Image (cartoon, rainbow, N blue to C red; front, side, top):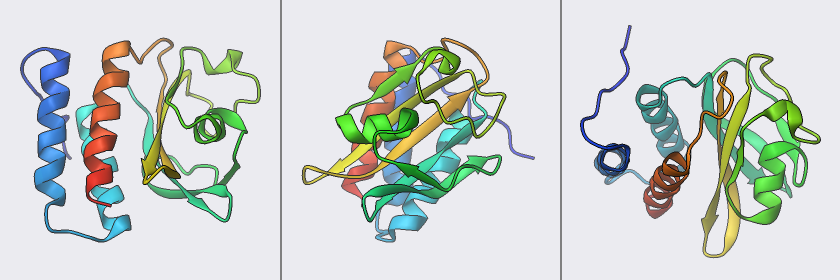
Length: 159
């Protein structure tokens, strides 16, 4: 069994180290699914207090389940629906402190209480989203948002 990766320093320094590790992991690999798979696995090992992390990929105008770590999930999400669809529609990160207060929240795992979704934008186009759920309310801070957005920018470079 794997244990969570322990990084040293401030949360910002930890996210910087995580992005560097992602870059090293993806260097030379061009396969989209392989890179998303390794990115979700890396985040699953790094992040504490989460119960789902993965990607939804934009296909034919809707989000379709991609590589992830966690329980089985909803397969298709319309743009504009739920937290993932809202992030895709707005083209910006959405942080929800209490998913039970989010209108239209799609509950794939009843244990989830907070969520962060970061859109994957390449050449001005939404190609998917990174979705992370936590069983803890108010789990995702402004530092998490900034660090995860940097992580996504690193990932976009390789896809």
